[in-house]
Image (tube, rainbow, N blue to C red; front, side, top):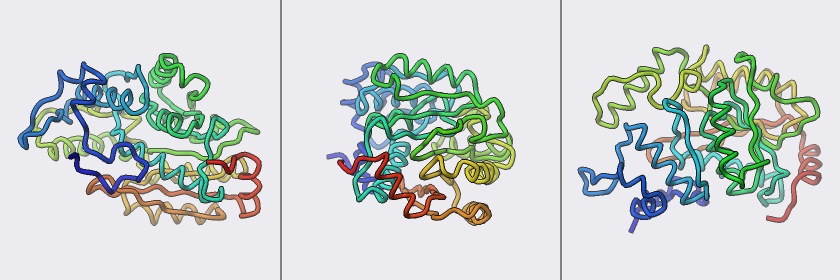
Length: 315
């Protein structure tokens, strides 16, 4: 019996340990990377980007019917279970304003800030709830990778699009057009404030995996995916300030916050734009605790009007 990861969201399809025999049946190429570890279990080397990418391919094919998925070498290859958790908790957040029913279907639109080359959040959101997504991305190569994934999987056509952010100093400006409406935004902001800090974080990750090897900044993410001036707090502060300029165009603005020590600075920034409601949603993946912060500028009356106009109460 596979041990259940009870900390994950109840609807998360990854609550059981990875079933490698089933995954290898789904994607035979994964077998080249699966070995028996020191505990006698089948696993992959999580410090090997090629192995992690092949595992993600297998997971996306097995659980989300994505037959073709690839990212350029050196780009962020995210852990699928944690990505799924954010999507499911977002669905619960929407349901709280919709008489407990999760809004579903293509008319529900999300905005993924910094989609990355992997498109994992929109893939899971669309395959689980039928939502459609616009992504923003500053990296031209990442935009091309996203377009290739969508083109190779017909079920994603017209469901996922991406716009390139021409000004890396902006978040919503230059992406959200006048009159466009989004039911939610999501974001996994750059963690670090400098290239040196990002490199130190990569070294710690490898040490935790028991690996001693030379590393580069391209292990597990491009520079723009891992760090920005001001780090996570600086990025989110900018996002909060810009959100106040499009306050009627989105129901819930949300972002992951990697460190709980950053929360006071983020709540302080939120006070300055005076949202109507702020929520902190805790998530857990194993021993790691994560969370996202959500805010809305809509009054309860406007929230009701939004739900009545855009969301079906049928689950």
